[in-house]
Structures are given as structure tokens and as C-alpha cells.
Image (tube, rainbow, N blue to C red):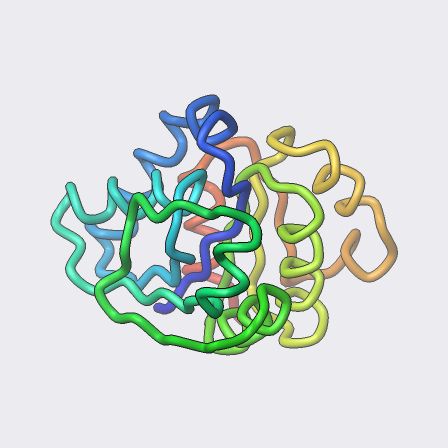
Amino acid sequence: MKILILGSWHDETAEAFRAETDLLGKLLAENNHTPIIAPGGGIYGAVGLSYRHHGGTHSVGFYPSEEARSAVNEQYIFEPDEKIMTESDYPTRNLLQTKDAEALIAIAGRTGTVTDFITGATDYALPSAYLLGSSKNMDLLMEFDGIKGNKNVYAGNAVRELLSFVENYTV
């Protein structure tokens, strides 16, 4: 299953969720999933490094244009196995990676995570799971109409629950 990983691109935030990102990367590798992981650091990089450390061999990354990346000075600490060069800005890159996913899992994050989660959960009706309490913005989103009560959306307290939800979701 192609699972888009969403979350903060800040390394300090990822460090606060080290146990969760390590476990998620391990479980993705063990269950032969293909994570869609944006190149870079933060939650993405932490999950990607764990995935590779635990034997994962096929991750996919959608890259923004070099101009867009340079404008925000994003550093790449993890580079996915399959690189898709979009030559676009971040919002367009984010839409393309969401459209390519079969499910998504979010840990932490701010505005970008919220918008990508909304797109995946509502526009593409993907099974979408979020680690409850990891982001004030995402916690608020879980109360919005269209998200709250949506059967393809799950907010849980443990990484194993999130993965189990997206793996076992049926329409």
C-alpha cells in the first residue's frame, strides 16, 4: 500500500516524536508498504530513515522545484528511493503526492499538514489517520464538519492503531 506520510518538516518537532517515527518506519518496512515521503527532514526524514534502517527498499518522494526548496532553505536528510521531480511549488507538489497515495498518516504538522490531510480525506476519500495530540492545528481539524464523523478518518493515540486503521479500512 502506498501511504503518504504527513507532518512537520522541522527537526525539533520530529525529535519530540522520535519513538513514534521510529516505530512507524519499522512497521512500514515490516509490512512491505511503500511510503510516500517528501524529501527532507522533520517527520518525513525521521520516518524515512527508520524505514530504510529496518529494511524498507522502496520509498517514493515528490520533489518541489529547486527554486521553491531554496526559497525556504529546506534541507534533505532523507532522499527517497524513487524520485519524482515535479518542478513545481510546494502546494502543487503536495497535491500530486496526495493524489498518488492510497492512504495517509499524519504526525504533528501545521498548515501544510492540515491542507494535505483535508485533500486526502475529503477530495480523494483516502483512509486517513492522525496521531491525536501531536498538533494543535490537527487536533482542531478533527472537530471540523467533513472530518469529524467521516468514516475514512481516524484519530488515535498510538502509531500501531493508525497503521491498522489505514491497512484495514474498507469502503
